[in-house]
Length: 242
Ligand SMILES: C[S@@+](CC[C@H](N)C(=O)[O-])C[C@H]1O[C@@H](n2cnc3c(N)ncnc32)[C@H](O)[C@@H]1O
Image (tube, rainbow, N blue to C red; front, side, top):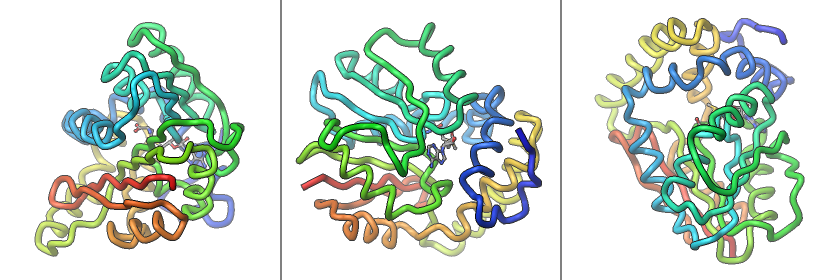
């Protein structure tokens, strides 16, 4: 496992860089997340799951599941769901499997895979979620097409991630926190200041909320939209597979 200096742009091998970075911070990822979001991420995740409108007993895939936060929220919301978490970083999945033994009852499995090439048949799932990961994926358009491929007709994809606040004054305040304080807190809690310098920086070249909604539509999703959270510093995007 290599700990490449994270402030440096990942360059061509972004996927390997991202995987190694998450492998480094996996043991302290949950604690760092709670500290950075001051515990508010729990409420954001609940909003995202409400927007999924998952059918009772439905089969749901959580993409880039990491240590399983959204997976466990889904199952706590509706224990009848059958949830598959997918991530390409085995140490994050190992932590998710550990947590699943004590945190939830229900149907859950974790699969190691790149979300750009999912090991599932077409039309497999009744819904898909993704949390705080779009910025890390090398090719967002290819990812959106792959999500559509594995969704059944009428199923929704809901994506929660950081975004760009439209109000310049609020964005400036939030940026102070995000680019200035997050690397300090994340670094202290996780032990990797580099990772928590890369993670905020990954937002810089990310599309704003409307541009990301357009990418959903261009990938073929219908009834696309988004909900801004925290004055637009976060957004939940959604779209329905026709
Ligand atoms: C910031 S974490 C988010 C984890 C979790 N979804 C959450 O809400 O806490 C991003 C995760 O995306 C995973 N990831 C990034 N790119 C990926 C890809 N192309 N395929 C699969 N997993 C990926 C990383 O390994 C990491 O676990």
